[in-house]
Length: 332
Image 1: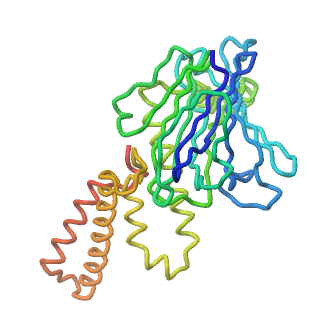
Image 2 (image 1 turned 120 degrees about the vertical axis):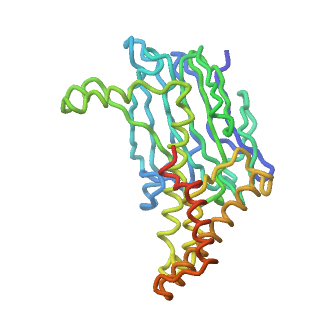
Image 3 (image 1 turned 180 degrees about the vertical axis):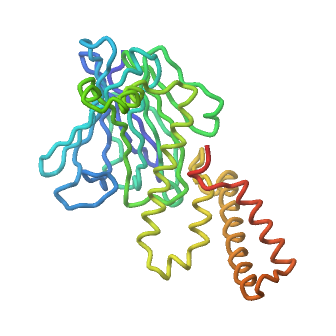
């Protein structure tokens, strides 16, 4: 039985480590994440040099003393020695026989030499290859009982790999975000509650708190990934626009509109592949329609409501396009 598996992705011709699985003698497994060089105690936010993350791992415990619960513990150690721990008490594996979401991550830029994988023991699991000039990796990790498999037609537009590791199944879902590799990263980790925490909460909140511990069936994993990836993309786009000057915000308003109305994730990370070209064309069309609408609005105001047939046709085309491309937060 294997005791180490290394997950990698190929960037600029070199294999880069994303994380590795380690199996302990107790049967517990540890996910040692190749932490982002941009990570701080609140991932994605810059504090000071003392807040930089230097070690990060997630432990999935068999928890033999509990017939229902597995404890998942996420540990971050900072450069000044402080340690932060987040716990997830999940009943997904033992009780519901389904997947427990462990974490989702937008990796940001992986070109630093620290990500290059060194020789060593352990099987290799690759997440493919991408061009960092145009893309960055976004992925989710889930863990379930060893006899479960993740199979859903809804996942056809995603990449999926799953392995049996000790007494667990580890599944990874990923796509490539068509937004150049940024000098930021983002890590999303679910938080659940212990029996004591649930018991101490108001009665009206306890049912929802218990439900969070149930995990997610394989048929609904695609929907969960969609939620995670949108959150990762929208936060990045919002942060990018907040950094612009007022003049730049006005200048790039059409681009902002287009990026908020299109799915920026692709199954492959190869620049100018047919899939990438189709996305670029869709963004260009949305930008053109947005600018046409702005011109129409200005023309309409200038004519006191007497819109020309040409501008009316453009506006109708805009309305049709928006109905076919609702904002990401409104998509199901």
